[in-house]
Image (cartoon, rainbow, N blue to C red; front, side, top):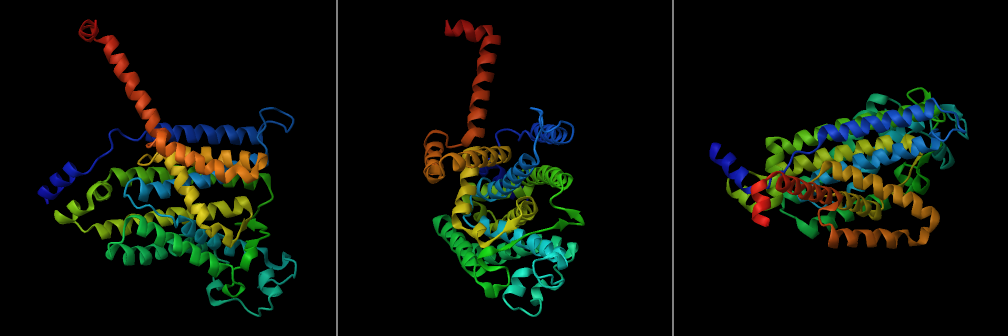
Length: 387
């Protein structure tokens, strides 16, 4: 066992520096407090006021940041380029959406206390069996994790045990997402067809239209993002995380020294899928709708771009990338919606060519140069040698 550990340390490229855990959590805390106080304390005509719309928008960005963490966990640290995390995100969103639909009760358009409006419209007479316990918050929480986790376990077990990797695995994950999108578009599936689930009224007894509920969801999302960041930081710095990093660097050598890479890959894939499902569940009440369009493979590709821009193998970089690209999307789609996809593609190419390690890598490089400059200035011998 000691020999295995020694070999593992020698072949895994561990993090050159510790992730700035405390700094990231501090920035997240300060931003949450500032936004909350700006929404509560200052009147609408004040320049310091943060509107309810902005609170919901920032909450959506935080959901994307959590999703980016999930993608970075499998891509940046395990080398699995997944183009199917949109499926896990959307499944978590549908689990939450089903619960929210059942909370509407007889306040829907058709006034049916048992059936959602779209089922009444389609002449359904009773709930499908998989909707039976959907009015329970405990069922909802379980399904938010169980749905994406089970799909990731089945898919990962089949793919990784067959040693599918690289571009072939990426194509398979994208095909899985596209197949789910086509299935959920069908009315017979019982998930609202192309319209999806919407017109939510309340969550856990609180009105979703209330400003206090919107702020509460924003704060809850920030707290969960912080906890997820701590969890990911713990994973990547644990022994299992080092094995995963070693698999990314040289899977054949890890297998040679006695480990079974497929077990670790399935494990990290399932954890990542659950985090993505949690992001989807937090996303739905803040946006107010979930439909099969979220399964679109383009969304999964966009998630990869978040991580590439922020920096692979850097948890805080994934958060930065998700926030920056999401904000840019909001701005550019309002100014020139037709050109956004071209801008997104150009951004990806630019980052790949000029910043292969993303913004996090650029900051690390600038920091190291500054440290070297300071050390030279403090070392008289180095100054004499240069002169």
